[in-house]
Image 1 (spheres, rainbow, N blue to C red):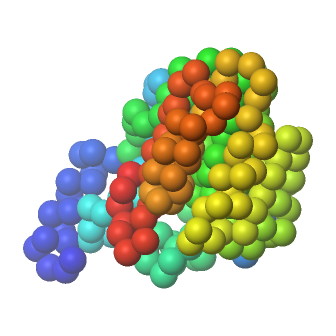
Image 2 (cartoon, rainbow, N blue to C red):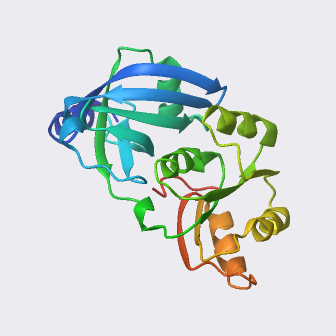
Length: 236
């Protein structure tokens, strides 16, 4: 977006978006960044685990990218993001260049998955795009079993360990045929009334939801959201 349209986008952003400062950066792996943001607006915001925060990575455009805050300290005006930098768009380019002290424009927090609605133990199923949500779930006192699919299971396991997610954890190789993932989901089912949370690839979300209907121990409730789909962007 250039010229008049770009200038209008910048004017609109000034009215809609808040400025936040990057106050902490840590590279967890080549594709994962742990970032701390601070903003006066965060002190007035109401956040619940699972809510989303949107960031504008490029001036001259109103295109926003969505991330899940993992923690929120309203008193200090500070939040944390765990970002999976994939693809080759403006968001990845912004995260590759970002430095501590830099200012960015954000919108939110806004409503998405309300993890507080999860009752009983939780079976959490996801992929690389679900890591921040899993970390946010850790702010609640839920007993959780995790099943992840990943293109590089060893690398994702290491990232999860850095975030304190090590117990009751299984990571399988991402495959077009979800049979291995579904097998691990069935094996991880909790022997008590539980909530199933499934996010990530739209195909996986659909497959797990459908398969769970035939499990011997069915979930008491299912919560989920597709974050991406092959050949599509902007699902959330």
